[in-house]
Length: 235
Image (cartoon, rainbow, N blue to C red; front, side, top):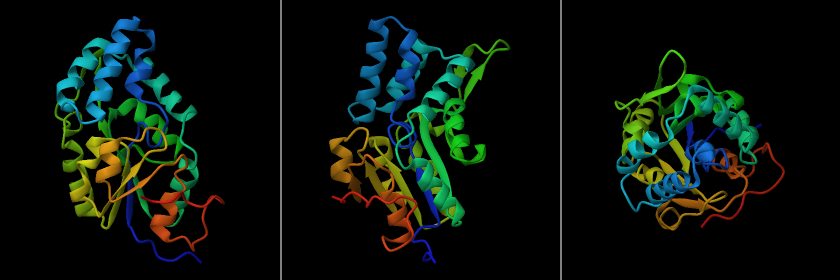
């Protein structure tokens, strides 16, 4: 019998954490190479903490202008490129009564596709929604969401922790690291991209490529793991 969990809730970032891609980069596939390169550079700068997220978020979407169909396709790409161990870990946590959610600066219509694949309800997804016209063409994004700017995840995760604690948060970027002080433990995941600032600032850092270590953190290595491989060493 598995022991009681060390955490009542586990929250994951989406891009480069649950899935091996960045949604905004996928949306650039149909753009001219110069525009696509510009968006990719903006994304890297924001995720590495070189520029504020809010400085690039609106600029990226003004270039990309994603339709409802384009976001559905990105959601399917999220599923196709799901990180090893994500399905097993999320399923095992939920079976044992641990609340699982996603907090992401990504676009909610795409993130929800991945969440449903993992068996998560839409109300467990916290991401930036998008407004479309009657034909499904892009109009704007939800500017009331805190998640399109720096420290937005701090606000969302603090509210989640008030409801369910202790809470473990797993992510890859600097905007994830910002939330370290409002969760009980922030674990950096480098299985897709290893960012120096996250490696240095996280409570623990796992190089991946498998998310199976999350189960061990929640239940202890002696519990019946959903995967046979041992967790990678922590920093």
